[in-house]
Length: 147
Image (cartoon, rainbow, N blue to C red):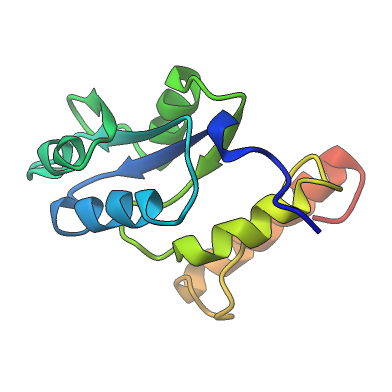
């Protein structure tokens, strides 16, 4: 199996809020993943720290929300502003290991949508689990196949 989608057609979108400590490492690790991206876009969602400056310092294009608008709005802003044919989203805190990206890209040879997931079962607060379960069921229902 090859690599699937050519990374030169992929915009990496990273929503980030107050991630000044991690964002430089995240962008740098994406650049060192032996993949040539169309671009790396960091959406600074109203950060009160140096998130935007640190992202720019390592070569990311930065979009800034002057006030926090939320994770979903940051994703939407990044996706709408991206120039690539395809979009890969990565969190700004470094929780997604770049070495796993090639595995996801390989799956694009046979799938139209590829989504990673955390291996740890209990990655969210317990009180969020019912809502996440409901969203998963709704999403599967909308596309008429299990997700």
